[in-house]
Length: 143
Image (cartoon, rainbow, N blue to C red; front, side, top):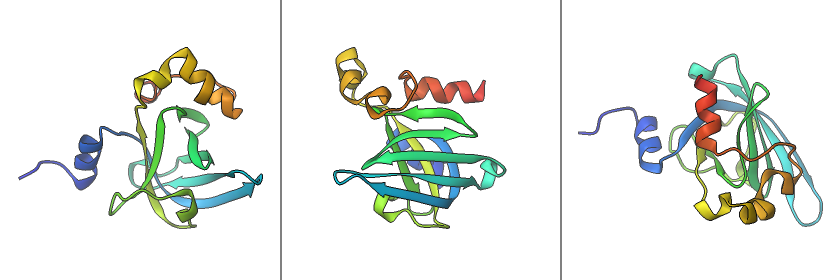
């Protein structure tokens, strides 16, 4: 028998870092002809109650912050998964009231080189922050 909750087992299996758990309170979308742009706002549930998160996307999720503090950026992967099934929720599937777990996953190591960051780092997408690996950013939140 496996120990732990389904969520703990999912995170262990995916090697994901739990960033936030919440329900979608707003989805703002625009398109510039090439990309689906937008941001999704989350209201905390469970142990995240009373906190707020925001994930910005351009086809893919680019930046996740909780109460204004960035916890993950591209090129690391930011995935929103259904809190019950752990199936990823695509940007098209973001709907008001849906309960999601925001999970950070370490990107392929070459994306973390300067050449990789020049192509897909946060500043490339207009996010005004230096790249800090998700495992370092999320560790700071507990400090």
